[in-house]
Length: 455
Image 1 (cartoon, rainbow, N blue to C red):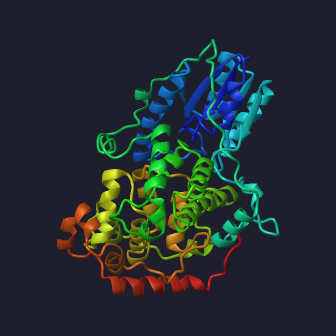
Image 2: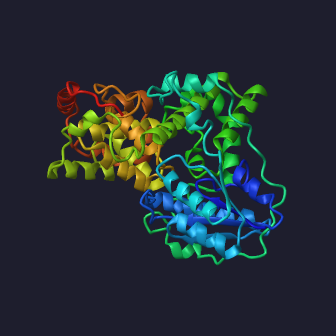
């Protein structure tokens, strides 16, 4: 017998239930990754994410090679490819960890086709702390408010303990053909070199980053996490996005560090609540469908987003970090140079685009999708909807982040701005904050009276 483990957004060996199941097969394992940009339910990756995927697959391949197992790469519609590979090696079992967005329709088709072909096809938990169907209101509905959602999570059973990597993994005697990673063209000139200078993808790097955070930063996390010039955050988001470390591992290692007295309780609680916010985004995606397409508050279907030539010129200035507002420009240039942006600044830049410029949040979400190494199907559109006011537990429509006030509060000495956009101090602002705030509030007032549609 031979088993296939289908890697997806779980590019690791530890706490990988599907890999553990496959490794029990005495006939050996085929380790498979499928690049699926053809299925209707798949969302093609942005440029920065494609760079990360390339590097992460390299590290996963190296880790598997230590067991003598090759990483097989194939491209195409995943359900079709999976059946083809299973037939090539006569696999009796095909195992994977679950996905929770629209891609689960692909998984359902694959599971049905494999079972119809007489093969054992099973999926396992692995990407979240809690399965979405396990957390519901008293009426059995999905939560729409984060605080209530997170209280419900904490009242229930604790997340499962992470499982270790297999002690041994035997390669199947028959291995299918593999495509070459370099032929996929995942790395383009926009990202070649500069992201290599900032990031080290892979499971080992993720574990080291978590340990460094717990040893050096989490105690001061509560007070320092909003200061963009300080190295106060974990920077784990791309590792979590690609599954190089599981949220269960992050959860339990953090609690173990707190129990050992290595970290402050306030920082630990807030850090774990950030995992909870990520969880809330994924649960919302599971229940509501593709978040990048429409606002959860359907009243915003009628919102008067600007779409003229002037708005596009201002949006381009925003993308280039040339708005004349230093904190906004610093954030957008940090994003372009590193594939990441401090979370406080993400909120400020998103608010400026959607509220001061009245540009559709989907335009900003698409730009972040292309430029963030941690852009995923849930958190990226979920957070854009939150800022725009049309999402779950969304920011009030009248909350407009003032980039000058935010800079005075969180970058008072200008360290962050001077690092990323020192010339922005000389650029004339493209919009008047007071006037555009009034314009935004007037536009939001227009939809207040529109009946809220059920979602």
